[in-house]
Length: 151
Image 1 (cartoon, rainbow, N blue to C red):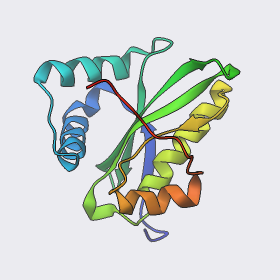
Image 2 (image 1 turned 180 degrees about the horizontal axis):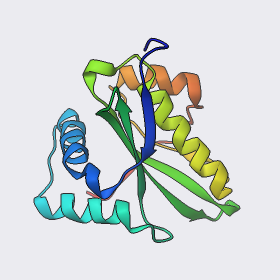
Image 3 (image 1 turned 90 degrees about the horizontal axis):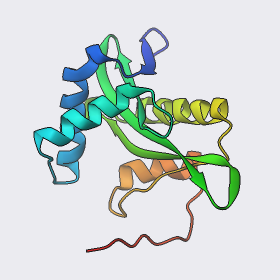
């Protein structure tokens, strides 16, 4: 991004629903999945609720166009008194990848976590997601944990 280009990272608002849906559908398509309409509606309502323990999110606007999003959640941990912050989803439109949008979204979550007094920020990605991992390796620490889930 050049110094004259405008990037705004701000909380998701009700007026962002169409852009959010477009971006989140593209994110899910990257992972070769989609969700029923009820999940989209419920997730967006949760993002706007402002309730403690509920998801929140940021949207990235480049030159006024929505080009990225992130969702995050504060949750308790048995390993610390302060909440931890889980960055669940991060997406940048392919047309702006490599321009700092992903980093700016993660840094916005870092700032929200700091304001909240969180003990840390953590996230997951798939092993094959090499583009994102190049960024994550610069701004985070890869842990040795392996994720399991119920089938």
